[in-house]
Each structure stands twice: as C-alpha cells, then as structure tokens.
Length: 434
Ligand SMILES: Cc1ncc(COP(=O)(O)O)c(C=O)c1O
Image (cartoon, rainbow, N blue to C red):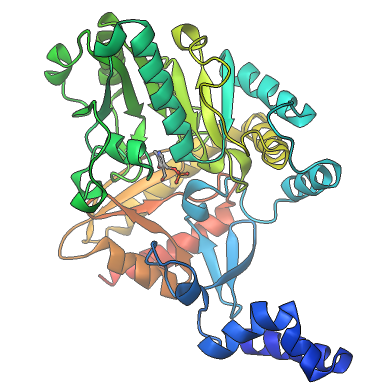
C-alpha cells in the first residue's frame, strides 16, 4: 500500500534538508517542480488543478497496479473493469511487458522515420502475418489512425473518380476521435458544437443495421465507408454482421473502399484479433490504437488490396510513429493474444460476466450487450449510469459510461476469474441498491 501524499512529500523534505542548505532547496528543481505546487494546493488532488481539466476527471490520483487491481495515492484498492478505457489489455505490471519495454529502452527509445528500427520491422512482420494485411502505417493514437484512414480514403477517391469522389460515410452513433476530421466523422451531434466549426466537408452518416439506407446511400461521389465494428462510445452497440457485409458490398459496388475503426475493438477485445473478422466484411483499411501496446501510446492502420498502394512517400507522416518502445510492447501484446486459448478465454469471460450480471436481477438493468470483454449494461431511468459509475468508484470498482445511459465494462483481457468475481460482487451490491 502506498503512503498518503503528505507523508510521501514530508519524507522528501527531510532528506533534502539533511543534504542541502535551505537556500539550495529553494533554488532546486525539486522545490520548483514538486514542493511549490504542493504547498499551494495543500496536498489535494493536484492533477485537477494543474492539468487542463478537459476530462472532468474524478478527484482520485492513481499510483500503481498489479493484474487487474489498481491503487490510488491513499492506498485504496480498486478492481479494474476499465483498463484505462480498453487500453491496459494485459493489466498492470505485466512482467513480460515491463521487461520488453525496459530492454528496449536500454537499446534505443526513438528512431526517426528516415530509417526503420529492427523492432519496428519485427512487429510489422508479425502483425501482418497474424492479420493477413499487406502493409501497416504506424502512428500514435486512435484519432491519428483514423486521420490516416481518412486521408487514404480521400486520395483513393481522387485517384479513382477525381474531385467528385470525396464523400466518406460513417455510422450514426459512431465515435472516431477528437481531431477536427475525426470529430466530423463521428456520427453523434453532441460532438459537433458550434464553437469548433467549421467542420470538415464531405462526411455523411448512415444508420447501422438500416437496410433501406444502404440501397441508395453510395454512388460515384463515395470514397469510403467507415464502420466502427462495435460502437464503444456510442453505448456498446452491436453492428449486425449481415448488414455490415451488405453495406460493404454496396459501397464497393459504387467504387468505394471499406474501412473499419477498430481503435477500441482491436486487438483481441471482442474475442478475435479484429472484430471485423466476426462481421466478415473484409475491410481494406483498419485503424487500431488503445490496447495494442498494453498502455504505451500506439496507433495506426492496416492496409490491403485496393488500398495498399495509395500512400506514397510524403503523403502522411508522424515523428513518433513506429516508436521502438511501442513496437516492443506491441510484440508482447501480440504474442500473448495469439497464445492458444487466449482469445477464446476473452469470449468466455465476457459471456460469464454478462450472464452473472443478468442473474443479479437488478430492476435498474435494461439490455446487456457486448462481444468478448466489451460489455454495455443499459441503466433504466431514473437510474443514471454516471451516478452508478461514481458509486462503484467509491466502493472500489472502476467502470465507465457510454451512449445515452449505459455502463461500460472493458477490463484487461487477462483479468482473472477471482478479480472478475470480486468486481461483480461490488457491481451487484450497487445495482441492487438502486
Ligand atoms: C472507436 C474509437 N475511435 C477512435 C478513438 C480515438 O482514439 P484516441 O483517443 O486514441 O485518439 C476512440 C477513443 O475512444 C474510439 O473508441
């Protein structure tokens, strides 16, 4: 258990006083960086005061974790049904991951894209081998992956229909990121406030699972259809496989390419490496990020077929793309996910959790949806998912919310049944109390 913040800092002060005169401490970086802000904020959650609070973060400072259990600065324990929003795919302090990152840090932390790194080539080779794609572009986040996909689609449209073929279709209720283009692509009006206008031209939406819509949507102005395979932020909404295949066929018939946003579903979260494998629509482009390097920032796109030769040197770049630490981490994640039985266990754990939650018989629970370890539990009004999330946090369970009123559960993919049961006990207690 970690000591409370005040004790921690007072220890540092004592050590410093032993070693330096007070005037030296005042000048020291330690004083400027740590003690000064601490004195101002008197040991409160300093983060919420000095980090731009774009996130509406809770007043909790996390310090460490092991497996699917994390601890805050006061030593309070939480079961992790959140995984840093589907990022810590192998939980916390996963030894092979820590070892690979440390080993790589000793060799080389950054290689600029004038060259390739040995670990980057190794990761790309294995990734393409496992997924069957032809090429990969490395970036750093989900929005960047989708930006790359959007640019690729625009160029594909230009090369195959001139200036007229520019439209990119996304799904209603989808989420694709926070840059201007990915915000525009996002199929939810609440993400398009007037203050950020003007948005990017030539994005349209269609409703997932709407068979009528796909009969007329696509034409010679369509460059691409982008499908978010399970709509995470939108409320863990499932896209029907038959519809996805029919929509992809219609888009291709009109001369467009088909892309999948697998930022939250990739890799392994839904019980297969890619969720689009289960939907069966064979996207030409797949964006990925979040969990692929177990917590090290990483993202990019997988490319194949008609989309493979679109990007040429200079079309799209990123200083940190293909960072060796991220590639070393990505290799460990890929190796774990592809071990016999691992992905099957993701599906089984997801089914187990959904069944158990249904068995609670809580009156406030509506539909329970999901694939693998991506689970949405609808709250029935007047019960509010955000209030439930707060109560769970107080009782030591990390979750999140999505869509209109859905509790979202996305634990580490290697969470143990013991931790699942511990977390479910807290969930049951809270839900039955609503
Ligand atoms: C499906 C999907 N696409 C894109 C993004 C944006 O990813 P990032 O926050 O890494 O830019 C997210 C993030 O939640 C996401 O869930």
